[in-house]
Length: 443
Image 1: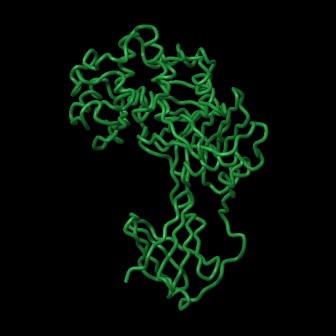
Image 2: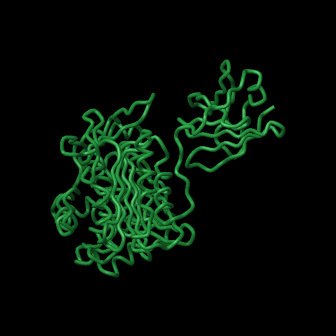
Image 3: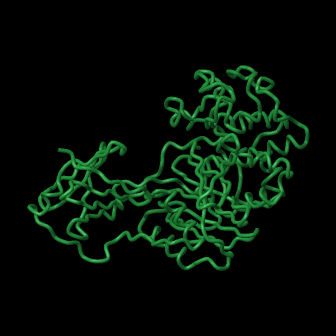
């Protein structure tokens, strides 16, 4: 449920049947085989799913493999569902975008100045409760509406309403409370009645305690070569309309396709949802890569990561969900996009293709030192342990790098490459999925 809204764009226009399915299979297979990623992917073109693949385990302890029906927590992608419900209420005359928060929660700071539109656009200035002290522990217990509001009141507003855009999960929590009060129904029931049932979604619901025996994925983090369950986990009644939906990648693409094809809201409502002139739309972000525009949202909760986006011109929807990853999540997503649209892309190698070059202790001496750059947040210490070259970033664990060329060293475990220019006291630092930087050795 973090406040990251990222924007992707894409290059060549291809028909769905032209994409390189074997290459996409190869990418996901190599990620799974090397314990880099577990999760699922769905790609829909013109309303039809043209690709679906799941890798890894939904439950490591049971050796239960993920499949197309595995449910994942999708975090803040929930906001797209909440905004859709709200626009349905607006169309039905049950509330107005100009209504102020004071009509529903007058106790919230600046409530009389904050409109529904402000909250949908993240321009309310309402404190983001996920930034509260010890929130990760606090949210693991079921919290009442009163407790949520009390936590909100304990923190000052972030800024004046309409002053700027500032992402706050609290906006969508409060919006879901407002929907409940108007309809006199639980938010979970509104989701079911207005989105899940009409679209025939069988594996989408308001979340609850994870039930692995029902093919619901457990989140993991990797440490010392082992997948470990993430703990504690959010009690799903707490994030409400900001992050409580669970679903499959296939059903997320189905929802997005329905939204963008006019099956859930009117054209006027859809136009408002996709109006990003103030920074974000209603439950949607927008952006472009290489001139290709799209709308989407990401989600991050309890070790789960998810991203979905829709490109109207191409009529393509993609959804990627993960319950475990040991590689930048958005690197995987960008790789999927590159392969689907036939952009230049090389599948990463996680094992050496040839033996490492053996260097003795004396030959390692020219590379030793501390490397830094004013614009790079970390310093990289390069040192040796006997005949091994080691590297260590600020406040992080040291790792071994091996020579693949005389001046180039690589860690396949960390997916980091160090390319030294000894004469100029420079080192090129490259990590998979991150921009390459040039660091200088300190005197």
